[in-house]
Length: 243
Ligand code: 0O2
Image (cartoon, rainbow, N blue to C red):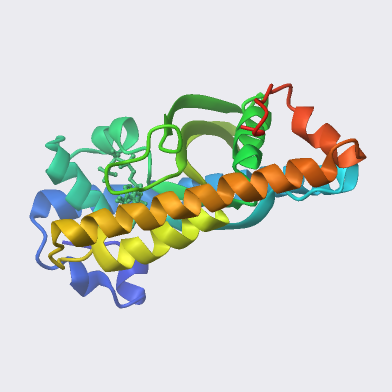
């Protein structure tokens, strides 16, 4: 079977030798549209960077610390389709896999996360499908982030493509915990005792308390300054902790 030529040139074609013919056919089809996920990530990154720059020039505050992005690997696409029991078809990729294009936006303060989400939701070429708020309701592991699953319109030579993206919003502290825990436990086969699980969750809770206290300090120190306008910019009303 003629496997996708770019993959062969990159020397990773062999990685797929163990896949069934159905899986290989699906990946061949998927590779034809993979570029749209990359375009979507670039467009989204530009939008979020522009928002950050606007906030810097208008309010002397950068809500965003840094941005990372990735395209889900072909192996993980196939793995997720099988794990979820979806038919091995392009339709499953288009209808059910929202996280092929994945972006991580690491913010300075918790409040920045919600402000940026509110501002993004006002873009006419972005449609939010749903939000999973793991800050309001952390996972049992202690994982905290807000996942925004949205569609972005991509204009390609006279055509409009609607491409889904999963954006994970977190603070620096949440990112620190999630990155280490991702290696240590989430994606590892290591076995954890109850005590170790409780400790990992406690470290996440401790970091959350630091986030809240840093947020309070930021609010106190910018009270009455022009920077404080940032807190009301998207029209979001916050409680006295700035959340
Ligand atoms: P990676 O390597 O980060 O890309 P599913 O995607 O099927 O696993 P679901 O319900 O669609 O699950 O998504 P969920 O659980 O809302 O979010 C999945 C993503 O959130 C993961 O992506 C992780 O990035 C992150 N995540 C969720 N739970 C945890 C956790 O307990 N610890 C850490 N460190 N990260 C978590 P991927 O694709 O599984 O992995």
